[in-house]
Length: 155
Image 1 (cartoon, rainbow, N blue to C red):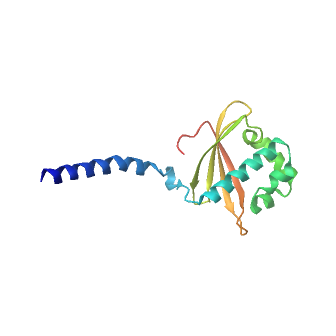
Image 2: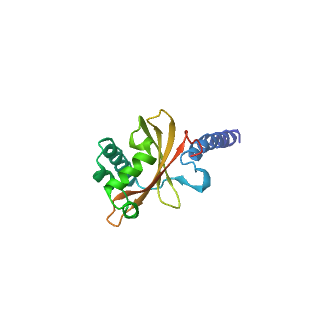
Image 3: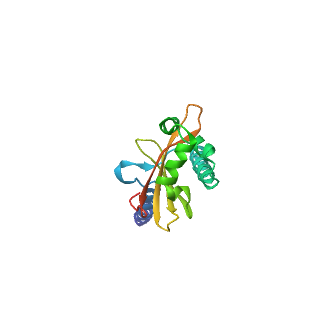
């Protein structure tokens, strides 16, 4: 009887110890969005697309940067020059960041949202949200980006 009691006690202690680790493995973000369930190759592809566009901005290669935009974005801006003018004027933190750190990728109703922590050219902290869209050929493209000033700790 004592042996059974100690075995049960050890089992309960082990379960209690494992529960917090399991609960923290995929915390949901506000609004019901959850850490992405995309397979690792898709997550890697998304990161590479964003990194490539950021590198194109650094080189002022509008044609390449525009090429990473999803069809609806390309249609909205029409050409690389118009797109780059919008980025330069409205998104200096991603056009010329001092520092970029990739944070989590979360599932949203609009598609995967790759969250980045960015230090803009003004030295201010921003949170960038890159909404991604998978194309019929399986590639990933950027379907939008929005910034919030300051480090958004709610995501």
